Structures are given as structure tokens and as C-alpha cells.
Length: 227
Image (cartoon, rainbow, N blue to C red; front, side, top):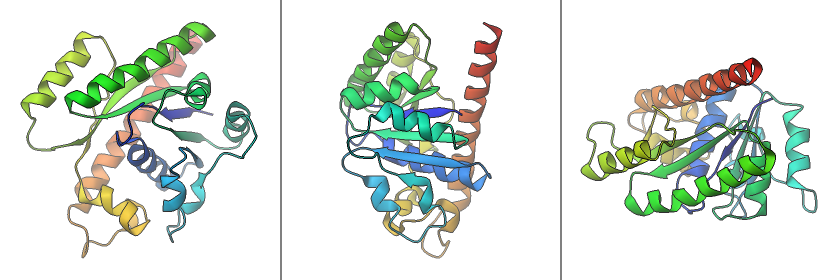
């Protein structure tokens, strides 16, 4: 079953946010999902201590057990496995990438984030050479303005395009609902419109991202089968 890895060597790039949005959205759509929180900060494990009906989708790596083996075991049991990895170029990130069917590279549309994201691309290229296979991947922009595209964002998007790095069409915008998921430890569809503005727009944004991930995985599988 597909393994999706959120990878960026910069902390605060949106790995946990994008992983939680994707995981809970896929679960809401009816899929069986596991989100493996391999970041020592355990942001997602903390989220799962709340009362969300989706809290059981989050799990943590077992101490002393090889991460690759754990990924293999989980992916044999669930339709989607999403892995949130520590924000550093370490052995666990490499292990997760080695098992990935898709690597997402969350990043904010800021120059500093773009420079650091290049490290994740470099590590991904190394894994592709090591395992002699192409690993589908793409940048997903986080916390963008849904109405206005800044000059900095336009410049970064153009730079990504010139470097021929794939980029998701769907960006995860700056939404109150996305931050309230962590504040209240629930999923988007469990938030109250009395406390959270723009729930419908946030839901549409999450659905669009999950749908694009599914479509990207489908195309990659078809391409692999054809090859």
C-alpha cells in the first residue's frame, strides 16, 4: 500500500500539519490510514491524545526496531501510510524515503525555506541513486494566502519550476482551521463553526490536496506498471 513521506530538513516547514491534514482527510474519505510520527517532538502523538475520532490513526515508532521494518509491517495492513520525519537529514529520513511511494516536500513560500528544501531534494536524489529507482516527489506550499500571491512566492515558484522540481498544484493555505486542529486536537470536520471561521473553505482545500495525492500515486503506479 502507498507510503507517503513528508520530508524537509527544516523544522516548522509544515510536515506535521500536512501529514495530519492528509491523514485525517483520507480517513474521512473512508480509507484505512496510519500516520507514523517519527519526529522526536511527537507533535502528532500529542494531537492524538485528544478526543478526535481519528486519533487512533497516529502511531509512534517502536524503540529499538528498524524504521524500515516498521514501515513494511504497517504498509501491509493499511491502505495509506503517512510518515512525518524529523526535520534533519538523518538515517531515519533516508530509511523513510527508501520505502516511499511518494515524497512530499512541504515548505513555506519564503526564501529561507526554499534554500533548506534543497537539502531534502539532495537526499532524495541520493536515495534514488542508491536504490536505482525513481521516487515520485513534489513540493507542496504551506500557509499561502488564498487570495494574494506575494512577489516572494512568485519568485520561489518560478525558481522551483526552473530547477524542474515537481510541485503540487494544490497549496495548503493559511487557514484558521488548520491551526485549530492542533489547538483543539481534532480533525477539520470535528471543529465548530462557532469557534473556527472558514471551515468550508478549509475542508475544500484539504480535500483537493488529498485528491491530488491520490491521483499522483495512481499515475506513478500506472507509470511503473507500464515500465
